[in-house]
Image (cartoon, rainbow, N blue to C red; front, side, top):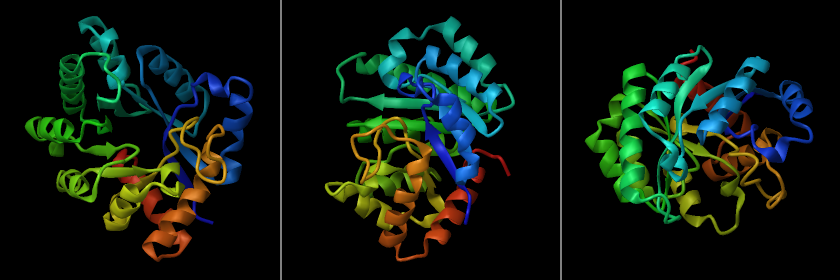
Length: 257
């Protein structure tokens, strides 16, 4: 069986407090050989650093999610710059724009998106993009900041095929997770069918977005095979082909080759 790389997880989340150590230690024997734990706030970045230190197969991404950008200032950015240089930090993220919520102000989100893109450029790290209800501004900002020179992944991709083409033109990868198994995920299924297999990586966003048949429950990397099955069916290829491609793509994305 091909190995699996969960490119986007939040094992620092309190949902894992009861059994985090047991769960993380057990992943490799279940075929989940590598995981990137992704920071979303300064506090979660600190917890991510702890997980990276404790578990050999856990890597980290450090950044501040658009919904948390109100907490950023120059001092915090300087701290992030320092921490992003630790050996097992593979990306700056998750960063981007989220217009689903009204807070913080969109200009605040844009400012810190640009600053964190600049940080990634400076440190030669890829970025993990979070974009919700903000397709046009995300694309426009990334083009203006020449994100194609930085590289990275659009996490939990949820937009149309047309928008996917614009991210693809910038050379970005696409994180596909449990939403692909949802019956109402028509847009994502169309986009995933369109995307070349060499630009798709697997992710959970756990504890969120568990795939069917576990929808609504706590997600974990152990549920990625459901996504593999759905993607293989959609692409008309063998499951091992999906696993192998996603494994290689994840290593290229995070420059672990």
